[in-house]
Picture (cartoon, rainbow, N blue to C red):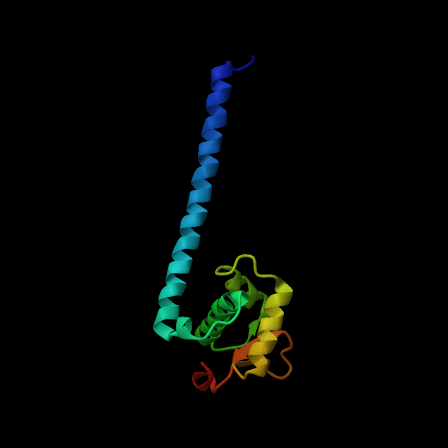
Length: 131
């Protein structure tokens, strides 16, 4: 037996409403995440650093996330975990770009890859001097 046309329309509208609720929920979670990061940036004065290029803002956000995650962890963390954590803040972050940022952070002495632990990163002991 076929449903009445108005029931089909009602089902479609209910389905669309549910999809919109899911989108709103995802946006609220992203909004909360960005607000938390903004508070952390202000507290650490990262926002006052000189920014010369558009990509520099994303780079600072990613670096802040990586340093925070490594501080909390206290042990070597795989690149994949750091990448997933950074993508919470910079959703369009590409994996190759992220790896390049990690290597730049390594060159600046912020992080290092422990011997025998390829693909894992640890916070440098002298981090307070570099941030």
